[in-house]
Image (cartoon, rainbow, N blue to C red; front, top):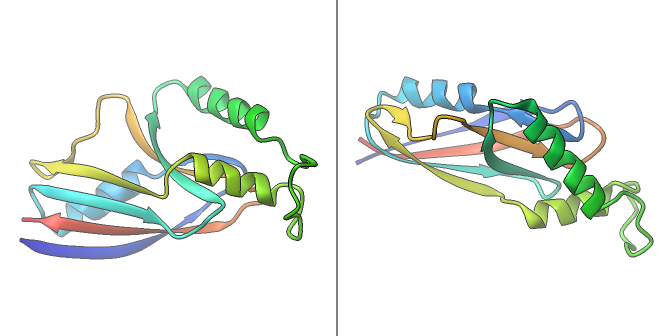
Length: 139
Protein backbone atom coordinates (compact mmCIF):
# COMPACT_ATOMS: atom_id res chain seq x y z
CA UNK A 1 0.00 0.00 0.00
CA UNK A 2 1.07 3.54 -0.75
CA UNK A 3 -0.22 6.90 0.38
CA UNK A 4 -0.58 10.20 -1.46
CA UNK A 5 -1.67 13.56 -0.08
CA UNK A 6 -2.37 17.02 -1.41
CA UNK A 7 -4.47 20.07 -0.66
CA UNK A 8 -6.68 21.72 -3.26
CA UNK A 9 -7.51 25.43 -3.06
CA UNK A 10 -11.09 25.83 -4.26
CA UNK A 11 -12.35 29.37 -4.97
CA UNK A 12 -16.07 29.81 -4.34
CA UNK A 13 -18.14 32.70 -5.73
CA UNK A 14 -20.30 32.81 -2.61
CA UNK A 15 -23.14 30.69 -1.29
CA UNK A 16 -23.82 27.61 -3.40
CA UNK A 17 -22.28 24.40 -4.69
CA UNK A 18 -19.01 24.25 -6.63
CA UNK A 19 -18.26 20.97 -8.40
CA UNK A 20 -14.70 19.72 -7.91
CA UNK A 21 -15.03 16.22 -9.40
CA UNK A 22 -12.74 16.85 -12.37
CA UNK A 23 -10.02 18.45 -10.26
CA UNK A 24 -10.11 15.58 -7.74
CA UNK A 25 -10.20 12.90 -10.47
CA UNK A 26 -7.27 14.55 -12.25
CA UNK A 27 -5.16 14.46 -9.11
CA UNK A 28 -6.09 10.80 -8.52
CA UNK A 29 -5.10 9.89 -12.11
CA UNK A 30 -1.76 11.60 -11.57
CA UNK A 31 -0.95 9.30 -8.66
CA UNK A 32 -1.15 6.23 -10.90
CA UNK A 33 -3.06 4.32 -8.20
CA UNK A 34 -5.42 1.62 -9.46
CA UNK A 35 -7.37 0.74 -6.33
CA UNK A 36 -7.78 2.19 -2.88
CA UNK A 37 -9.76 4.71 -0.87
CA UNK A 38 -9.75 8.48 -1.29
CA UNK A 39 -10.61 10.61 1.72
CA UNK A 40 -11.51 14.27 1.25
CA UNK A 41 -11.64 16.70 4.18
CA UNK A 42 -12.62 20.38 4.07
CA UNK A 43 -10.67 22.57 6.47
CA UNK A 44 -13.49 24.99 7.32
CA UNK A 45 -16.55 25.27 9.58
CA UNK A 46 -18.72 27.37 7.26
CA UNK A 47 -18.41 25.19 4.14
CA UNK A 48 -18.88 21.47 3.59
CA UNK A 49 -18.49 18.61 1.13
CA UNK A 50 -21.28 16.76 -0.66
CA UNK A 51 -21.69 14.03 -3.22
CA UNK A 52 -24.71 15.08 -5.22
CA UNK A 53 -26.32 14.81 -8.65
CA UNK A 54 -24.35 16.62 -11.34
CA UNK A 55 -26.75 16.20 -14.28
CA UNK A 56 -29.67 18.56 -13.54
CA UNK A 57 -28.74 22.02 -12.19
CA UNK A 58 -32.22 22.28 -10.63
CA UNK A 59 -31.05 19.79 -7.97
CA UNK A 60 -28.37 22.24 -6.82
CA UNK A 61 -30.78 25.19 -6.88
CA UNK A 62 -33.37 23.20 -4.92
CA UNK A 63 -30.80 22.18 -2.29
CA UNK A 64 -29.79 25.81 -1.86
CA UNK A 65 -33.45 26.89 -1.59
CA UNK A 66 -34.07 24.21 1.05
CA UNK A 67 -31.12 25.36 3.17
CA UNK A 68 -32.16 29.01 2.73
CA UNK A 69 -35.56 28.12 4.21
CA UNK A 70 -34.19 25.78 6.88
CA UNK A 71 -31.48 28.12 8.21
CA UNK A 72 -32.22 31.71 7.17
CA UNK A 73 -29.68 34.49 7.55
CA UNK A 74 -30.28 36.97 10.36
CA UNK A 75 -32.40 34.64 12.52
CA UNK A 76 -32.87 36.28 15.95
CA UNK A 77 -32.13 32.91 17.56
CA UNK A 78 -28.40 33.34 16.88
CA UNK A 79 -26.09 35.38 19.13
CA UNK A 80 -22.90 34.76 17.12
CA UNK A 81 -23.14 37.61 14.61
CA UNK A 82 -19.63 39.11 14.84
CA UNK A 83 -18.88 38.19 11.20
CA UNK A 84 -22.30 39.13 9.85
CA UNK A 85 -25.85 37.74 9.68
CA UNK A 86 -24.78 34.81 7.45
CA UNK A 87 -22.01 33.54 9.76
CA UNK A 88 -23.90 31.47 12.34
CA UNK A 89 -26.33 30.12 9.72
CA UNK A 90 -23.24 29.00 7.75
CA UNK A 91 -21.98 27.10 10.81
CA UNK A 92 -25.38 25.40 11.27
CA UNK A 93 -25.46 24.44 7.58
CA UNK A 94 -21.95 23.02 7.96
CA UNK A 95 -23.04 21.02 11.02
CA UNK A 96 -25.96 19.54 9.06
CA UNK A 97 -23.82 18.43 6.15
CA UNK A 98 -20.34 16.81 5.97
CA UNK A 99 -16.74 17.84 6.48
CA UNK A 100 -15.32 14.66 4.95
CA UNK A 101 -16.07 12.11 2.26
CA UNK A 102 -14.68 8.69 1.38
CA UNK A 103 -14.71 7.51 -2.25
CA UNK A 104 -13.42 4.11 -3.39
CA UNK A 105 -10.94 3.95 -6.25
CA UNK A 106 -11.59 1.06 -8.68
CA UNK A 107 -9.44 0.41 -11.77
CA UNK A 108 -7.87 3.84 -11.45
CA UNK A 109 -11.19 5.73 -11.33
CA UNK A 110 -13.36 7.21 -8.61
CA UNK A 111 -16.23 4.77 -8.02
CA UNK A 112 -18.89 7.47 -8.29
CA UNK A 113 -22.32 6.67 -9.69
CA UNK A 114 -23.41 7.83 -13.13
CA UNK A 115 -24.89 11.13 -11.95
CA UNK A 116 -22.72 11.76 -8.89
CA UNK A 117 -20.31 14.63 -8.51
CA UNK A 118 -18.18 15.93 -5.63
CA UNK A 119 -19.02 19.44 -4.44
CA UNK A 120 -17.79 22.10 -2.06
CA UNK A 121 -20.93 23.60 -0.52
CA UNK A 122 -20.14 27.22 0.35
CA UNK A 123 -22.40 28.46 3.14
CA UNK A 124 -21.24 32.09 3.33
CA UNK A 125 -22.64 34.80 1.05
CA UNK A 126 -19.19 36.09 0.13
CA UNK A 127 -16.73 34.04 -1.89
CA UNK A 128 -13.78 32.37 -0.21
CA UNK A 129 -10.88 30.10 -1.11
CA UNK A 130 -11.61 26.78 0.60
CA UNK A 131 -8.98 24.15 1.28
CA UNK A 132 -9.82 20.51 0.65
CA UNK A 133 -7.26 17.98 1.90
CA UNK A 134 -7.04 14.76 -0.13
CA UNK A 135 -5.54 11.52 1.14
CA UNK A 136 -5.38 8.43 -1.04
CA UNK A 137 -4.44 5.04 0.35
CA UNK A 138 -4.01 2.46 -2.36
CA UNK A 139 -1.87 0.65 -4.87
